[in-house]
Length: 126
Image 1 (spheres, rainbow, N blue to C red):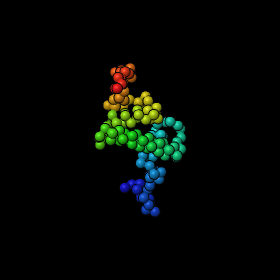
Image 2 (spheres, rainbow, N blue to C red; image 1 turned 60 degrees about the vertical axis):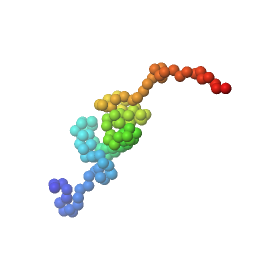
Image 3 (cartoon, one colour; image 1 turned 180 degrees about the vertical axis):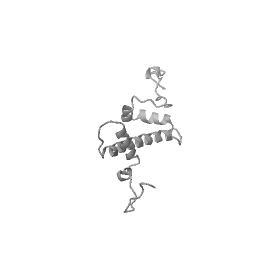
Image 4 (spheres, one colour; image 1 turned 90 degrees about the vertical axis):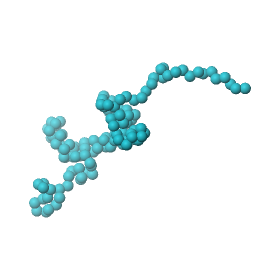
């Protein structure tokens, strides 16, 4: 259990994710930022902020996809539900506009020109 307890105090280490109240791994995001060579130096707050943003986006997509799954009377989220969730949300659709989701399909849409014409004349009953 190396790294779990301190030498003198005997305190358990608390992860940066736990300190920030996040589920996403702040340490891993920090490592990716450093290894990715996005900048020479990476501040202490940057990975926390980025992990929080990623967690929020993930939660938003999962909530909308869960709603789409429930609308289709399913208990499991499949790529189709993620696609419907993203494309029906204006902001997420703009953010992920150039993204292709495998097995996502397309939004159900029939052009109005292709629909059968409604007869305007109805005989009034006297």
